[in-house]
Image 1 (spheres, rainbow, N blue to C red):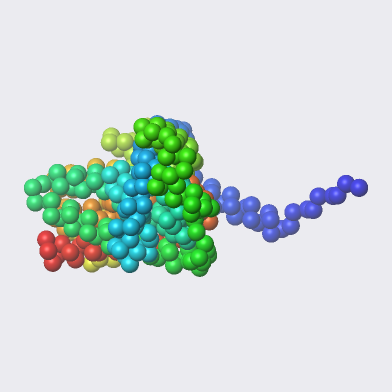
Image 2 (spheres, rainbow, N blue to C red; image 1 turned 180 degrees about the horizontal axis):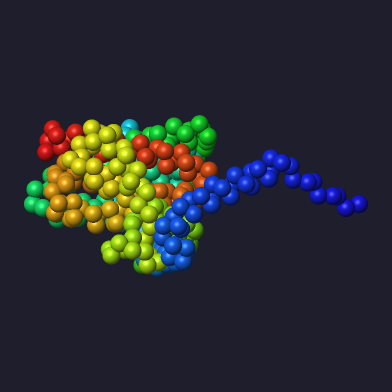
Length: 385
């Protein structure tokens, strides 16, 4: 006998109505100001530009870092790093020494660079299960660090020290972010389970070059490692597409304003600057924490939440107007590194690490870490700048 469908209760209908209201009100608010046609054109053009310029860039980074990580694993460099850097990484981050390799690759490139390493079995074998989700917070803390630092140094002859103090702030903020994340993951996973199923003997053979790998020439092993790691990078580049396109489009449309002419044209990256407006409202809090000279300076950290590249473009204009100085350069460097687009990349990175359910905890921990990074940079500049 065919079972009859259970009728939807009143609670289910109310849930649908509330959902439509929650979705409809922001769409109406933004669409009514941009124009309905411009609104949808901007969504599509922004997603398209993100796919071409951001996702493929991330994929290229993932391919190169994946190849490098697998190559280092093949010839035992990760094991060497783990042995020597554990004396620093363990007490500071509660992570194995090999995690320093992930921080370095992100500093030289961008946040998702650590994903290629995190999916390498020889890299993962150093980690407990509870430590893997925290790699997102560690990598994001140093994302685009070299680019941000050199850009800030290039803004004036006296800003090199300020930028370096910003790096100090980001370093302290990364410790806070990772440690807060590990508090949550320890409760969920415990501290005993390892991150990978690779047997110790198999891992040792891969690291020490024994077993079947030793029968092949070094050139053959290097070529295989490069291609295998590169293929893993391609897979990861495809995996981050949904998170980057959906989340980053929303964040950018709530961060940027209309075209330079002051009108909406439906072009990519236009929007309603709601996030900077909110930042203005909380300037009474951010000024004592970060020492900003003007309320406009809050636009940098708010914009960095979506894209630190867009935030960097604000700095020359602020300097030309005399709105910021050395203190702001230090704080911008620290927050720019820690908050380098993490609202968009965090979700995609946690999804790629198969820890999607921990995304909100990772974002909360990293929000606190970024605030601490800015505060440390501010007070370090007051004392040492």
